[in-house]
Length: 327
Ligand code: PMV
Image (tube, rainbow, N blue to C red; front, side):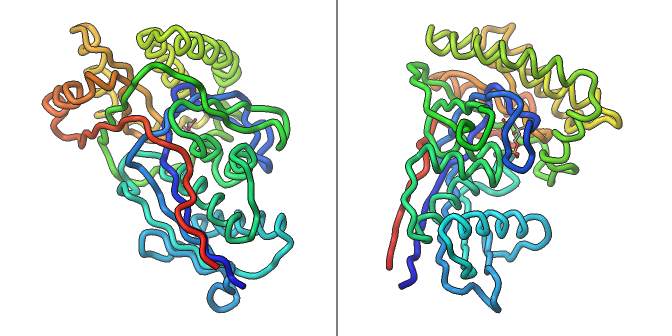
């Protein structure tokens, strides 16, 4: 009997970043991180261990057959699920995302969270959310957090058992305005870039140390429903991460001139009274944290002032969902 399982997950944006692995093979991060899962950013994935095609896994992502590292990462993840389920049969995997892959939203987080849920169900396993979060971590670190909706804490932990995400109670109603200045593919993967930063940047230890305190401040601000305090530490934490990357030897610079334009505009808008704080991941695009109420107006102002960018509004979204299981 072959089980076909379909699951979906939204992407998430880190407010306090994950940058650096203490254990590469198990994807145990150096620091804990905090993120917001974004609605309307689902990747939906269907898996069945049906023999694949030509004796190998058959992988289709958004209608195309990926090669190279993209395929290897999926196959490696399927291997992990197969070894846990005690099976060897190749799988068919079909995945599609509702947001364009180059929309400036971390697609791997949603992708591996959905794959973890679909592949385990197709393999006849029933994992609870914490176990799924630990498994998704092995596909892509940030996928650990996409298992849950809303505000999510990833406890760094020290081993496979203790490194997992969990939801954080939150009475705030934040939103993210995503400002895409370039939809091009990144020049260096986050895995390579974080390894290089850890190995060569004299600023990395200082960022990691500061990040522990940043997380404490961020969680305090969430509990106190203090968005300005949260926003300040969110922006500082991301800029510190980029400062550490820029100080790597040779330097890792994800920013484009337009990235600085957006950062500058966010500062000016803050001076004008808008509740806006910027964060940037491993790319040139900027995500602006604001309130749910202000998001549309903030997006309109950003569109007006940065006309070359594509600007969209995202509100908090839900966690991983098993959509269908058929046998
Ligand atoms: O999940 P990865 O391995 O692609 O790393 C993600 C790293 C950042 O997006 C820059 C930060 C984060 O915490 O998501």
